[in-house]
Amino acid sequence: MCQSIYTLVKAMQLIRYSTFKIGALVASLLWGYVSDLLKGRRAIVAIGCMFMITFVVLFYTNATSVMMVNISLFALGALIFGPQLLIGVSLTGFVPKNAISVANGMTGSFAYLFGDSMAKVGLAAIADPTRNGLNIFGYTLSGWTDVFIVFYVALFLGMILLGIVAFYEEKKIRSLKI
Image: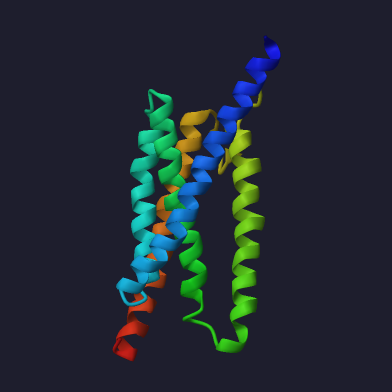
C-alpha cells in the first residue's frame, strides 16, 4: 500500500514538473515570434510576460484544485521562460558582434549563479517553517506569505530594469528605422 502511494505521489510530481517545462517550451517559440512581429521589441514583450506573472502567481496562490495548479504551472513556465529567453536575444542588439557569445555567457552565468541560487537558498530559508526566516535590512521574512511578497518585489524590480532596456531598445530601433 505504501509503495503504491509513493509511486502515485512521484507520478503527480512528474506531471507538475512536466507541465511547467511544456509551458516553457511552447512559450520560448511563441514569445520569440511575438517579439519578431513587434519588430524586435523584445524587452517590451518580456515586461508583458512579467506583468502577467503577477496575476498567474495570484491564481496559483488561490488554487483550489489540481487542475488550477497545473494550469498555473503551465502559465508560469510559459511566462518565466519568455523573459529569460528574450533577455539574451535582446542583449545581442546592444553588444558588438564579436562579443555576443561572451555577453550571453555572462548574462546566463549571473542569472543562474545569483537568480537560481537566491531562489533555492533564500526563498527556502524564508519558507522553511522550522527556521526563524531570513533577516533582510532588519526585517525578518518568514513563511509563504513573505515568499510571495518577495516574488512580487522581484517582478516589480525586474519590470523597472527591463523598462530601461526597452527604452534604449526602442531608441535603437527608431534610429535604424525598422
